[in-house]
Length: 179
Image 1: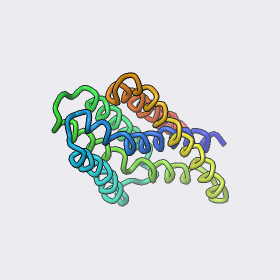
Image 2: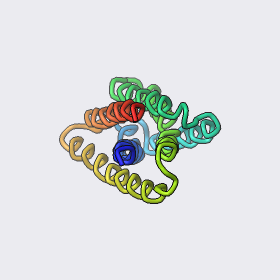
Image 3: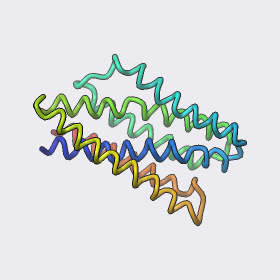
């Protein structure tokens, strides 16, 4: 089913992004000048933003507007990650991390909801299993790629990998809109 394949790829990007940011934000924040405690607070702002956005949007996102939401949030994520890379301000870095969390929040449930709106209910279990497995593959490869690239450089220099994944997610959302 092409819908399941495309949405599985979207979860590859999304879960790779969520795992990468969740795993590398403290390293990023420390490199930006935060103490260990401050870096933990920056990480918390990411997760709080993600959770808050997911809770706030649960009543606002529908199958009718879901693809637009995915595209807009993927673009917002790419921009906020780009700003994390470009900033020289410690405070701005923390703000961009929180914005990234806000942009991530609704993505997972929206991708699943859009998928379920486009397939037969008898496929829900299999579709979710496939999508989640591919998503976990993204969650296990993207953070490693970022870490390997950062090994000889810095975490900030490896964040374009995450930014590219967000752009790919945007492109996938546009493809989903055509299905």
